[in-house]
Image (cartoon, rainbow, N blue to C red; front, side, top):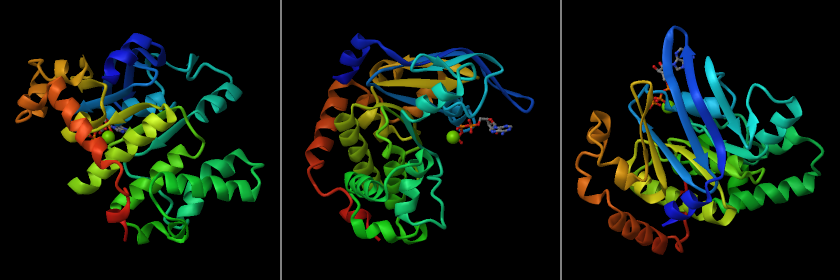
Length: 283
Ligand SMILES: Nc1ncnc2c1ncn2[C@@H]1O[C@H](COP(=O)(O)OP(=O)(O)OP(=O)(O)O)[C@@H](O)[C@H]1O
Ligand SMILES: [Mg+2]
């Protein structure tokens, strides 16, 4: 399983050290430490309001910790040169919890946005890159002219994913990637993420509350509760812990939380991955 290989490599891409986060008067995280290793898919779970999105925002430098440090690719956020930070930013892509497409822009312009910010990209190259990403996420060139209001939920996720991948990042952040999708679209989207992850050798940090998404993708699971990390490790180990949130989260899935089930679940997903992914997501 990928878990063992990535654990052996042990190169931290993200290092969160003793972070305390305060929003308004509320302490969201207290003394939280967490490393994300190169090549792994780390899933973050926790109750609503437990601080998962805030943890991603810390990793993206959109939120500053009140204490502690966050480093990405060896650069400490909040303490590095602007040029270094810009370089670091170009090495990650983000799929935000709400999709965050601009409703007034076409699919093409939404995906091209990060390229335009880099400037000096010839128009023709930009078109080629956008069309390449569209096809990578299973959409057709005709979809490029549509506005977000003309897309299904699954297509919106694919466009947002194409935008997150347009700069060919090595690190991908996904906040609730399958939320709001029906079970079949959710499965197709998960398969797409897995295909792209292996094609592009991505490290992935993913927030999810969906157990099937965890089974399909997660190498390790980190559990947020009571302002701290109450568990971290392979799903089969974390799911056994007696902590109340963990027990509630995996309730009804106890017999599936083992490596054999997860292996067979993943190989059944892979067998389906040869099918045209977006056909049923069209609108
Ligand atoms: N800008 C803000 N100012 C004050 N409090 C905030 C702010 N943003 C978030 N919070 C609070 O911080 C806590 C953590 O929010 P966060 O969005 O990180 O939770 P979450 O785990 O992602 O939840 P969900 O599963 O619902 O997405 C919540 O109690 C929220 O109300
Ligand atoms: Mg959230």
